[in-house]
Length: 312
Length: 145
Ligand code: SF4
Ligand code: FES
Image 1 (cartoon, each protein chain N blue to C red):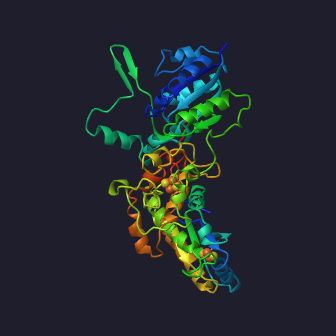
Image 2 (image 1 turned 180 degrees about the vertical axis):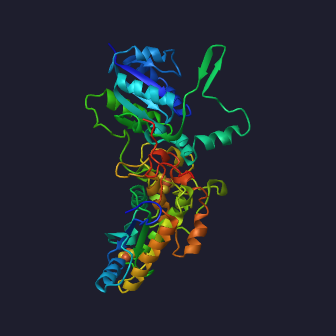
Image 3 (image 1 turned 90 degrees about the horizontal axis):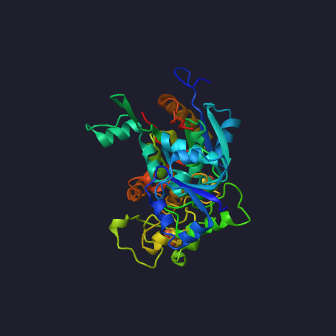
């Protein structure tokens, strides 16, 4: 019997699902090697099908997306019970991801912003003896390992085909990596960057620039050109795709294993290259970063030390 | 120690550079200068060693204020450490504001080994300032599980 696997999406954009499909013909190898028993985006199995399975009967569940409502929480727990291994797939499941930036507000604030004076959703609606309900929308978005036990992490927004292929290889191979492993190289992106030789040993900048303000040179280190590239703080494994597209790293592979708080590390890396000892001048240079939280915690706010904004 | 209302005693974590501010604190102590007892001192080799995550960790674990103190500009034993601390603290203060935390809860000071009096004054003044701000109430960790 082929091992059973499941895929599920929580608070996510669909990019992680797309990434699985992007495996192209490799997806056929995957389909040949395993039995996909649950994958709402592609196959017509239902929640009750999973409920009917014995506990632990699924070899691995790949869950992408953060946890932001009660429905996602319920399915995450269900899949945990039915699976031997749970993989947090993609940075939203791993660290909270882009949906986690909602932690700068709360349910009330978000609903007020989105629906204004329009018709806001109702959690429970009854009509003629029938009822319709919606999941509870939480105040705070959390990463997957805040609600269930997670065995492995596949980073990225989304994970690249190579990272997914390597992860599957590691999981189907005979030597399972230790529990809790992030299945990507444990070194900074700069180490694997094609431009790393153009990054000066001691980098100091009088000015930071935003991407729309410059036409960046295609060969030189982007940080050396004044763009806030987070490569020094970010885990490698993406094959420097953004850099190859002439865009600075925004940190979607999260931190290396020695770093507890990605944003603090990234902030430190960028602040350190500022070439001034004068408070006024430093402040002026830093104006090129209008949104520090969104810049440094773009993918990791829920799993940061502070976790969310403090609401009045 | 009461955490609210009258009698609130702020908890302060102070990261002091070994070469200057720590000695300054020591001098204040041996000279029996009066200063507020609220500061818990952590000795570091240089203010540049204070990673922003140390500061966030202190707040997360219940500090109402964090003091980073190092050698005066030009006097850092590792040349650039205090300049790096300045750049990081300025950026971190902006970020704290966005997190809903008053930036005055983080303070950077240059205190030399000879400035025992200044150390005493800074720690007393910071304590008073935090007393006025009140306890730092962080967002409760989400209870979803
Ligand atoms: S800072 Fe960015 S562009 Fe420069 S070497 Fe590192 S990853 Fe490459
Ligand atoms: S040695 Fe004192 S601040 Fe660097």
